[in-house]
Image 1 (cartoon, rainbow, N blue to C red):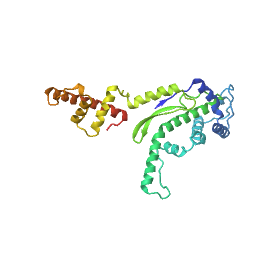
Image 2: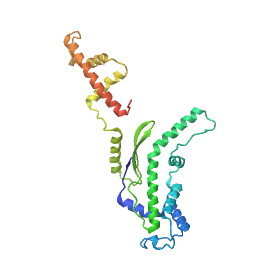
Image 3: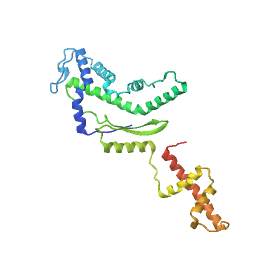
Image 4: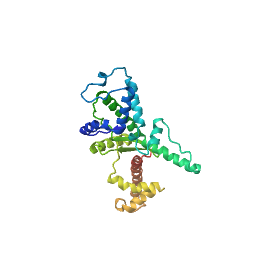
Length: 273
């Protein structure tokens, strides 16, 4: 999985405004009230300068993180059930569809499992984002300073599985650097699938012959078809020794070129069987 980068000024701008988020404001208010903590303004020192009692800062940090996971504003609408299942490493179960037959329920279950595979990279990104929001909120609580957000928040390139096959996907927001996401996507695609084969003019011409092979034609029949379409390359008398030698060489050449093209086709479609 590759993390993408936003513009540094954008990071700083959004970081300054992050503590004003409604969910974060509620969490900060609850924490201050529960632990009897003052509100620290930027430049006033740290919260430790104002404490009159010992405070379990680790407990505060953990509570902030827990509250952020529970806050509705950070989980995409409609994804709450899937994200909750991901958090406990489970897959939502389709138990009943108004009395639908079991094979229908099984089909829907397969769709749910496919969606979980597809969304897991995004959920991993969301986990990381909530972890960072926890750190930012904790720092703001202690110092009053709204620090710059990390560069890995709003864009993601990752490889996952879809219908049992590997896929590479990109997630970008309005603040994403398009040049960066394009380069990252190319790199991730190469890492997942390797270098893309180049279809030359010669390989394109051979594709007709490869199709004939897939259709069940013999190498001899394919060679005859080639000779029919390119008569000037061969002796006119099919009974002559030179014709038979030329056709034998053609058949061998066709075998080798089709094997190479078959490998290319397999690489393009990703069929490893």
